[in-house]
Length: 75
Length: 322
Image 1 (tube, chains in turn blue, red):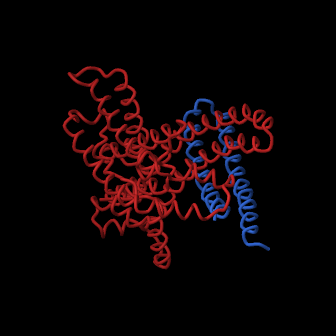
Image 2 (cartoon, chains in turn red, orange):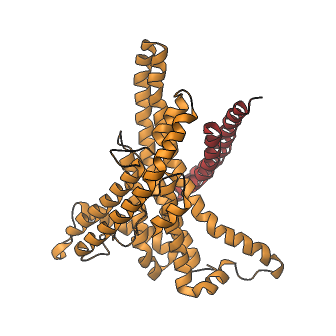
Image 3 (tube, chains in turn orange, brown):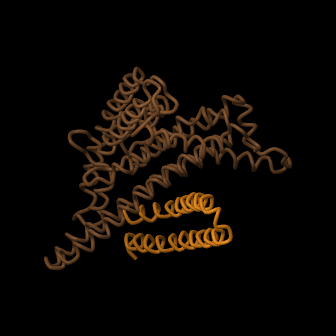
């Protein structure tokens, strides 16, 4: 097992796993936000702001994992 | 000063000139007579840039030699990496450094132009009105809810500087042939360092060093938990700016890598067969334009998140046990 091949495999699997976590998290966030908007349409602006901030934070964590996979693939 | 600190930290990447951004870039609503102040901050901005450029010039040839011998053939990964990582540019040793200074000068220049419409007690119009709405947004939505009334106003110039710098750096990076300076981890580390200094300043100036450290731990806690909480809180002081760094860097980097990958499909498929290259060109271009629009949105969001998190952290240290 060539270590370089293992590193590429690890990078690929890692990127997939990272995006599963990020996608699931942001999907749940979007679902709750939409439900909140449906219940109280006059709170759209507040909900939208909170949703974008939370999505940015969750994506930040996903990107930490992405950096690790990129390092694996490059080095 | 912070440029020298960063030159010590970062051996691999060229150390950018993280000038004292809050002082020069005074927003339109706050500054009445910024014209004489414009000259000295611009001079300050160029002096550390020259020192950092000299330090970077030493590191860049070593990095280039290392990259040249690392991979035998220029594969797709190397081409992508070559495009998003730092490169020498027009005689300067670092493209990201050039664009860092360019964006800083642009932020200062645009603020000065915006303030001009306030002369003579006029109601601002044009760029002045746009900048005023931005500053009011940051003061009323970001600074004051998180930091409090008086402290919020004190920190609004810093938050406006962060927001406009990050936004302008990202927008400038969308132009083909330029580079996003925040796509360099050294630059985002510099921004996070300034944010870290502001957070500690907020706490220490109000409560002193001992009081600030005392405020780190939440009040009313059982004594048994104290050792763990101290470690956690002290680590938290450092992980928060680190998270800011990596978040901004990764967002900017990922956007550019996707664009470069899509555009790279054209010559890659063109090598197989010229017809494949021609066929994939419209698809690649359309997808690249779409990703660029997405990157535009991401630029706004990331600038806002960086500013908002800095405001929240400053508020946590200025008004603890909230």
